[in-house]
Image (tube, rainbow over all chains, first blue to last red; front, side):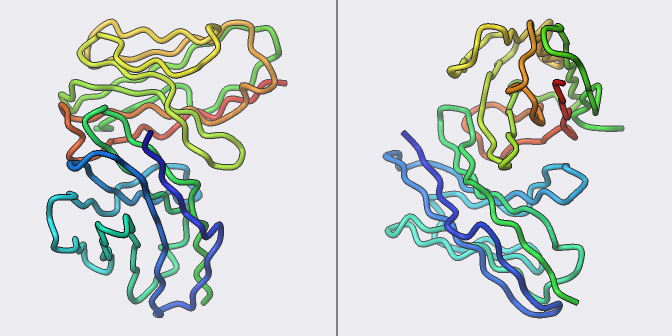
Length: 113
Length: 114
Protein backbone atom coordinates (compact mmCIF):
# COMPACT_ATOMS: atom_id res chain seq x y z
CA UNK A 1 0.00 0.00 0.00
CA UNK A 2 1.13 3.50 -0.74
CA UNK A 3 2.01 5.69 2.23
CA UNK A 4 3.09 9.32 2.51
CA UNK A 5 4.80 10.72 5.62
CA UNK A 6 5.39 14.33 6.61
CA UNK A 7 7.52 14.30 9.73
CA UNK A 8 7.22 18.02 10.55
CA UNK A 9 3.83 18.88 12.06
CA UNK A 10 4.79 22.56 12.26
CA UNK A 11 7.41 24.82 10.74
CA UNK A 12 8.05 28.54 10.97
CA UNK A 13 10.19 30.90 8.94
CA UNK A 14 10.97 34.59 8.84
CA UNK A 15 9.45 36.54 6.01
CA UNK A 16 11.78 36.66 2.96
CA UNK A 17 13.73 33.62 4.18
CA UNK A 18 13.76 30.12 2.68
CA UNK A 19 12.07 27.08 4.21
CA UNK A 20 12.03 23.41 3.25
CA UNK A 21 9.18 21.04 4.06
CA UNK A 22 9.95 17.32 4.13
CA UNK A 23 8.02 14.43 2.66
CA UNK A 24 8.81 10.76 2.22
CA UNK A 25 6.68 8.17 0.49
CA UNK A 26 6.55 4.47 -0.07
CA UNK A 27 5.33 2.81 -3.24
CA UNK A 28 6.04 -0.36 -5.15
CA UNK A 29 5.11 1.23 -8.47
CA UNK A 30 7.67 2.57 -10.93
CA UNK A 31 5.31 5.09 -12.49
CA UNK A 32 3.74 7.57 -10.09
CA UNK A 33 3.18 11.26 -9.52
CA UNK A 34 3.93 13.50 -6.56
CA UNK A 35 2.20 16.70 -5.52
CA UNK A 36 2.29 19.47 -2.96
CA UNK A 37 -0.99 21.12 -1.99
CA UNK A 38 -1.51 24.24 0.08
CA UNK A 39 -4.50 24.73 2.36
CA UNK A 40 -4.77 28.31 3.70
CA UNK A 41 -7.24 29.26 6.44
CA UNK A 42 -9.89 29.64 3.73
CA UNK A 43 -9.88 25.80 3.59
CA UNK A 44 -9.45 25.68 -0.19
CA UNK A 45 -6.97 23.03 -1.40
CA UNK A 46 -4.61 24.57 -3.94
CA UNK A 47 -2.13 22.66 -6.09
CA UNK A 48 1.33 24.15 -5.63
CA UNK A 49 3.60 21.91 -7.67
CA UNK A 50 3.74 18.45 -9.24
CA UNK A 51 6.48 16.00 -10.23
CA UNK A 52 6.46 12.95 -12.48
CA UNK A 53 8.53 10.11 -11.03
CA UNK A 54 10.10 9.29 -14.38
CA UNK A 55 11.56 12.79 -14.69
CA UNK A 56 14.87 13.35 -12.95
CA UNK A 57 14.65 17.13 -13.25
CA UNK A 58 13.21 18.82 -10.20
CA UNK A 59 9.99 20.77 -10.79
CA UNK A 60 9.93 24.53 -10.20
CA UNK A 61 7.05 27.00 -10.03
CA UNK A 62 8.19 30.55 -9.33
CA UNK A 63 9.31 30.62 -5.65
CA UNK A 64 8.40 26.96 -5.13
CA UNK A 65 10.72 24.11 -6.05
CA UNK A 66 11.10 20.48 -5.11
CA UNK A 67 14.04 18.25 -4.30
CA UNK A 68 13.03 14.84 -5.66
CA UNK A 69 15.28 11.98 -4.55
CA UNK A 70 13.76 8.89 -6.16
CA UNK A 71 16.07 6.31 -4.60
CA UNK A 72 15.49 7.74 -1.15
CA UNK A 73 11.73 8.18 -1.87
CA UNK A 74 11.96 11.76 -0.72
CA UNK A 75 10.06 14.75 -2.12
CA UNK A 76 10.72 17.99 -0.23
CA UNK A 77 9.27 21.42 -1.01
CA UNK A 78 11.43 24.53 -0.89
CA UNK A 79 9.77 27.92 -0.59
CA UNK A 80 12.09 30.82 -1.36
CA UNK A 81 11.53 34.44 -0.32
CA UNK A 82 8.69 33.43 2.00
CA UNK A 83 5.70 35.73 2.04
CA UNK A 84 2.95 36.21 4.60
CA UNK A 85 0.50 34.71 2.11
CA UNK A 86 2.44 31.43 2.17
CA UNK A 87 1.15 30.71 5.68
CA UNK A 88 -0.96 27.55 5.39
CA UNK A 89 -1.10 23.80 5.87
CA UNK A 90 0.97 22.04 3.23
CA UNK A 91 0.17 18.51 2.16
CA UNK A 92 2.38 16.15 0.21
CA UNK A 93 0.51 13.58 -1.91
CA UNK A 94 1.34 10.64 -4.14
CA UNK A 95 -0.75 9.10 -6.91
CA UNK A 96 -0.46 6.20 -9.29
CA UNK A 97 -2.64 4.16 -11.59
CA UNK A 98 -5.08 3.36 -8.78
CA UNK A 99 -6.60 6.78 -9.45
CA UNK A 100 -6.43 8.09 -5.95
CA UNK A 101 -4.07 10.43 -4.18
CA UNK A 102 -2.71 9.45 -0.79
CA UNK A 103 -1.94 12.44 1.41
CA UNK A 104 0.57 13.01 4.18
CA UNK A 105 -0.43 14.30 7.59
CA UNK A 106 0.33 17.92 6.66
CA UNK A 107 2.78 20.55 7.88
CA UNK A 108 1.52 23.84 9.29
CA UNK A 109 3.74 26.67 8.05
CA UNK A 110 3.87 29.96 9.93
CA UNK A 111 5.51 33.04 8.43
CA UNK A 112 6.93 35.48 10.97
CA UNK A 113 6.96 39.13 9.88
CA UNK B 1 -17.19 30.18 -12.96
CA UNK B 2 -16.23 27.83 -10.12
CA UNK B 3 -14.55 24.68 -11.46
CA UNK B 4 -15.67 22.34 -8.65
CA UNK B 5 -18.53 23.63 -6.56
CA UNK B 6 -19.89 22.07 -3.39
CA UNK B 7 -23.04 22.91 -1.53
CA UNK B 8 -23.59 23.66 1.22
CA UNK B 9 -20.36 25.15 2.59
CA UNK B 10 -21.52 24.72 6.16
CA UNK B 11 -23.94 22.22 7.61
CA UNK B 12 -24.98 22.02 11.27
CA UNK B 13 -27.40 19.25 12.15
CA UNK B 14 -28.53 17.07 15.00
CA UNK B 15 -27.56 13.48 15.63
CA UNK B 16 -29.78 11.01 13.86
CA UNK B 17 -30.66 13.29 10.97
CA UNK B 18 -30.06 12.53 7.29
CA UNK B 19 -28.22 15.06 5.12
CA UNK B 20 -26.80 15.40 1.62
CA UNK B 21 -23.85 17.27 0.13
CA UNK B 22 -23.81 18.07 -3.56
CA UNK B 23 -20.85 18.50 -5.89
CA UNK B 24 -20.63 19.64 -9.50
CA UNK B 25 -17.63 20.12 -11.78
CA UNK B 26 -17.50 21.97 -15.09
CA UNK B 27 -13.99 20.87 -16.10
CA UNK B 28 -15.05 17.90 -18.22
CA UNK B 29 -13.15 15.53 -15.91
CA UNK B 30 -14.08 11.86 -15.91
CA UNK B 31 -13.31 11.06 -12.28
CA UNK B 32 -14.72 12.50 -9.07
CA UNK B 33 -13.92 11.83 -5.43
CA UNK B 34 -15.10 12.34 -1.89
CA UNK B 35 -12.48 12.89 0.81
CA UNK B 36 -12.96 13.38 4.53
CA UNK B 37 -10.67 15.73 6.48
CA UNK B 38 -10.81 15.08 10.20
CA UNK B 39 -10.07 17.45 13.07
CA UNK B 40 -6.36 16.70 12.80
CA UNK B 41 -6.45 17.75 9.12
CA UNK B 42 -5.85 14.23 7.86
CA UNK B 43 -7.34 13.65 4.38
CA UNK B 44 -8.74 10.22 3.67
CA UNK B 45 -10.45 9.03 0.52
CA UNK B 46 -13.99 7.73 0.84
CA UNK B 47 -15.29 7.13 -2.68
CA UNK B 48 -14.37 7.61 -6.31
CA UNK B 49 -16.47 7.52 -9.47
CA UNK B 50 -15.22 7.29 -13.04
CA UNK B 51 -17.86 8.35 -15.53
CA UNK B 52 -20.72 7.39 -13.17
CA UNK B 53 -19.15 4.05 -12.19
CA UNK B 54 -18.04 3.48 -8.59
CA UNK B 55 -14.37 2.52 -8.68
CA UNK B 56 -13.16 3.16 -5.15
CA UNK B 57 -15.16 2.38 -2.04
CA UNK B 58 -12.95 2.58 1.02
CA UNK B 59 -13.93 1.26 4.43
CA UNK B 60 -16.72 3.69 5.16
CA UNK B 61 -19.87 3.03 7.22
CA UNK B 62 -22.76 2.11 4.97
CA UNK B 63 -24.62 5.13 6.34
CA UNK B 64 -22.64 6.99 3.67
CA UNK B 65 -23.97 6.54 0.15
CA UNK B 66 -22.54 8.31 -2.88
CA UNK B 67 -24.50 8.87 -6.06
CA UNK B 68 -23.32 10.06 -9.46
CA UNK B 69 -26.18 10.86 -11.84
CA UNK B 70 -23.70 11.90 -14.54
CA UNK B 71 -19.97 12.43 -14.77
CA UNK B 72 -20.26 16.11 -13.79
CA UNK B 73 -22.12 15.48 -10.53
CA UNK B 74 -21.32 13.52 -7.40
CA UNK B 75 -23.48 13.66 -4.29
CA UNK B 76 -22.97 12.26 -0.81
CA UNK B 77 -25.89 11.24 1.35
CA UNK B 78 -25.38 10.47 5.02
CA UNK B 79 -28.00 8.66 7.08
CA UNK B 80 -28.38 8.66 10.87
CA UNK B 81 -25.64 11.21 11.47
CA UNK B 82 -23.31 10.62 14.41
CA UNK B 83 -21.05 12.97 16.34
CA UNK B 84 -18.00 11.32 14.77
CA UNK B 85 -19.17 12.33 11.32
CA UNK B 86 -18.26 15.93 12.10
CA UNK B 87 -15.50 16.85 9.62
CA UNK B 88 -14.81 18.74 6.43
CA UNK B 89 -15.86 16.82 3.34
CA UNK B 90 -14.10 17.63 0.08
CA UNK B 91 -15.21 16.83 -3.40
CA UNK B 92 -12.50 16.67 -6.08
CA UNK B 93 -12.16 15.79 -9.73
CA UNK B 94 -9.35 14.68 -12.01
CA UNK B 95 -8.66 13.90 -15.62
CA UNK B 96 -8.55 10.33 -16.78
CA UNK B 97 -6.13 7.87 -15.25
CA UNK B 98 -3.35 7.93 -14.43
CA UNK B 99 -3.48 10.89 -12.13
CA UNK B 100 -1.07 13.11 -13.95
CA UNK B 101 -2.27 16.56 -13.08
CA UNK B 102 -3.64 15.95 -9.60
CA UNK B 103 -7.04 16.93 -8.31
CA UNK B 104 -9.10 20.07 -8.50
CA UNK B 105 -10.85 20.43 -5.18
CA UNK B 106 -14.11 21.99 -4.20
CA UNK B 107 -14.08 24.43 -1.29
CA UNK B 108 -15.23 21.80 1.19
CA UNK B 109 -18.31 21.33 3.35
CA UNK B 110 -17.87 21.68 7.09
CA UNK B 111 -20.31 19.29 8.71
CA UNK B 112 -21.00 19.72 12.41
CA UNK B 113 -23.17 17.16 14.16
CA UNK B 114 -24.54 18.28 17.53
